[in-house]
Figure 1: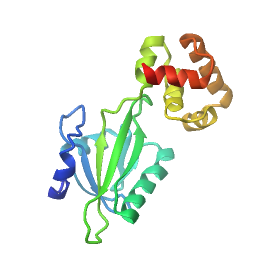
Figure 2 (figure 1 turned 135 degrees about the vertical axis):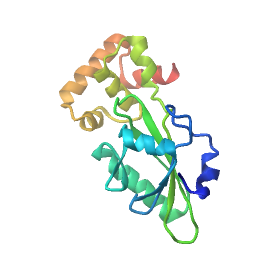
Figure 3 (figure 1 turned 45 degrees about the vertical axis):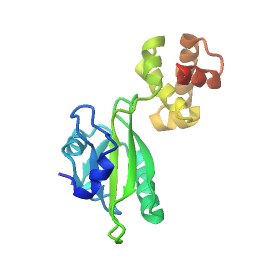
Figure 4 (figure 1 turned 30 degrees about the vertical axis):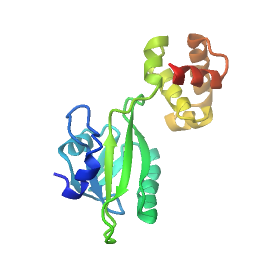
Length: 188
């Protein structure tokens, strides 16, 4: 059950697509969970993008932990909202996290609203162009504005492998340049 302070934030109608309820978590400055909606508990139990380790809300991928920590610090330092994006296990969908300060009394609590419905623009391109999962993962990161070397590092694959995936994506989409490819996918 989440705290009553988060009701106003939950009114954004952000829902977990599997449960139909608001996905809201309350954390402190260390991301220690102090309250969560049933949908948030289900998301954390599933470990699909976000998980609960030793009572701390964290991305399932260690490479995304710094971004979530920075977003929490930004909220607490500025008193304003912040966002972070975490990838689902399939690498083709994202969880958009909206963070907001919960209290103005210095208790350092943050509400995290998880929008699990966010889908990458690359998802439609995968079916449309017959891309493999690996090609789709590379394309999704390119559509986020990542460079090919960054995508390779995030996917823990060699740069040459990423280049091979990109060349196959070019062949299947008839795109000639990375910028054309991203424009094609984002405009679809």
